[in-house]
Amino acid sequence: TSGAIPGTESMHVGICALQAWATAFFLYMPLRLLEYKCEVQSRYVALEALAAIPCPAEANADSHHQSLKL
Image 1 (cartoon, one colour):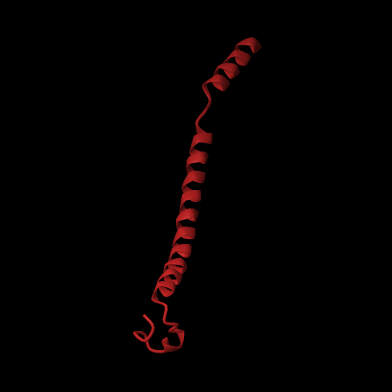
Image 2 (cartoon, one colour):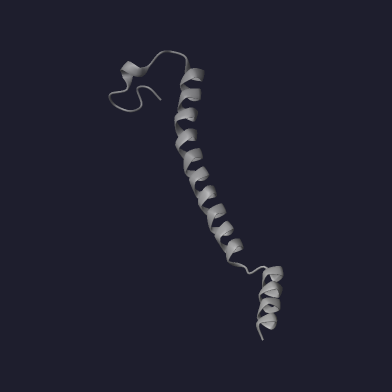
C-alpha cells in the first residue's frame, strides 16, 4: 500500500509479504483485545446471574431452621 496513500512512500521497504504480516498484526491485536474484553464482560454477567439463583439446599436448610424455632 505504500505510495497509494500520500506520505507513505518512506514506509516502502520492498517486501510486500512483511508489510502484509505487519498490517495483519496491527489490525488483529486491537480487534482481538476488543473481543476478549467483550467475552470477559459477558462471562462476568453470566456468573452474576448464576450467583443470583438461590440454591435449593440452602432453602431447605432455612425452612428446617425455622421449623425448629416454632
